[in-house]
Amino acid sequence: MAAGCVPETQPPDLFALSPEIPRNRAMQTRFFETSNEQELLSASAAVLQDLGFQVEESVREVGFLRATKERSAREYGQDIQRALFLLLSLGHLHMPVDLHQKIAASLITRPLNSEATRQEVRIMFYRVVWKGDGQADRQYIPPGEQYMEMIRDPEIYQQFFAKLSKAVFLEPFAI
Image (cartoon, rainbow, N blue to C red; front, side, top):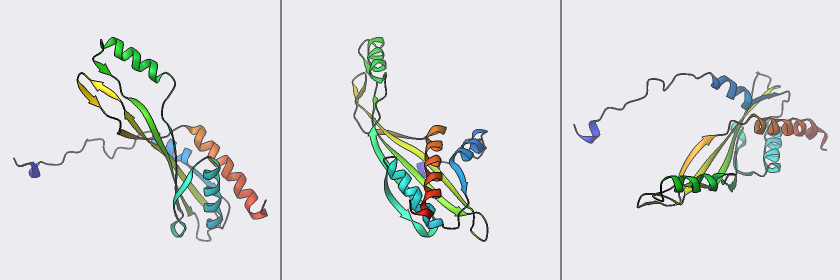
């Protein structure tokens, strides 16, 4: 069979909903009693900037905002784990370590009713981590390998929404 004729295979659970999906959505979503979607988007951008993010993209017409920040991805114990791995492999394997990460936030606002007096804000935090400097026998793994993961720490979402609630409350008063 030619390479172009290989049937596409999908795992049987590709579209299956897992129990954590509603929980994650609830963690990522809050509702605000305001009719001004633009002020809500501006307040969201200000909160993200206060948290160290830089706004990279904003489409006010659809209530979309994307912001990022870059940080070191090294975690406590990573070098110790790497040294133990090297010792246990008798010097043949070097475990790659997380070097750098880019944390991103994608936010969308939308009116919930026809009068647009109530708005929904949903934000998703995720990160891209670059690994590198590893070895498997004589094959060197250069820096640059990467992976992406959603951030599911409720504290991050609670912190964002607590600051956004204050900002939305204070914004009409120009405080």
